Image (cartoon, rainbow, N blue to C red; front, side, top):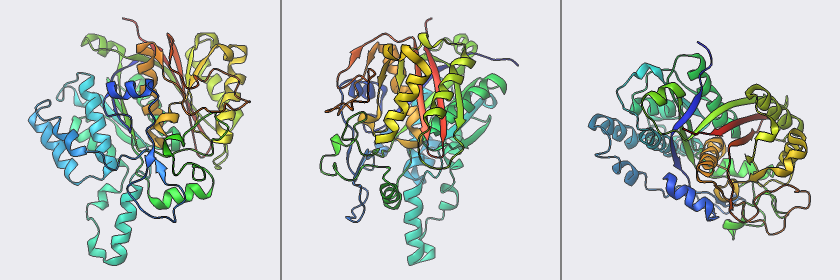
Length: 426
């Protein structure tokens, strides 16, 4: 049916920096660190003890805040799911409902033309480990609903049930590029598969102590220097960076065809021009400068955007010694001399790494910056790595008008996925 232009008309967020768009943007601009010590476990044997912890988040209060704002039957469906769902599923549904309301959409209109795509996999890691521990003591003590709740598809299905979406519904995984892979699928659902709307949700990974320990043992996450000063642990581009900081977080983008959005008078945040995925042909968790470069170049090619038109890059920038420099070199390779005119910042310096949801949480940050004309800082840069020779917005917010933004996302398994966004002008 031909390509349709795709725009964002609603956004929802839940991270340590806020569960509303207003608070989230304000804390980003203020350079507020969101990293603390983990509270969901107490085991000195686990090396890494810091992260963006939402364990104490009051999901019940968030749920009650929807009462009276949504139809009674929708609230009843939400309460039913909320009562038994694991933490990660609750965050996915609450965040998606926020985005739906932000878009000003009805709950009972054209349900078969609304798709749900969820980015993430192996999401309820901690919940599964707790059930395994219960099973070891007594098999009858496990949560019987784990037969359903353990499945990643339960996230997407729960969102679809609450929002009343009956179009395509599925889950896609691509490690830390998952939410961008989901974005790519959501674009296709609108452009080629007859949907008017696609709910694209980056789901929170509920880490387990075992998973954190495994990542520490392969030197992927920080654990040496910052267990007592967690607010300083995430420091992309700084010489003392030692690994990424895992964080809870979820983000949702409501995609809509431009014609559908205009017909109903929707507020439009931005237009997504395209999203490209490639792979490195290697399962190892090592970044590929060539793979990242080729992904960016293909994205520019298929969107017809010249490299000189791009002004801002929301970087993947995980705070790893190798990864941060590999990405900057790929930017140099892709943009040539224009790289020196680019503004680049690192949302993970404040958020930590929200893993599967990172492309969504960080794209929302980027869109808010485009709309406000002010870029957040990359914090904790006490000693800039001498190999960093591009403008990474070190430690200070900057006024800067952005028309076109590149969002980079790279995942374990050699997965590269980048998206290109344009500020929308009515």
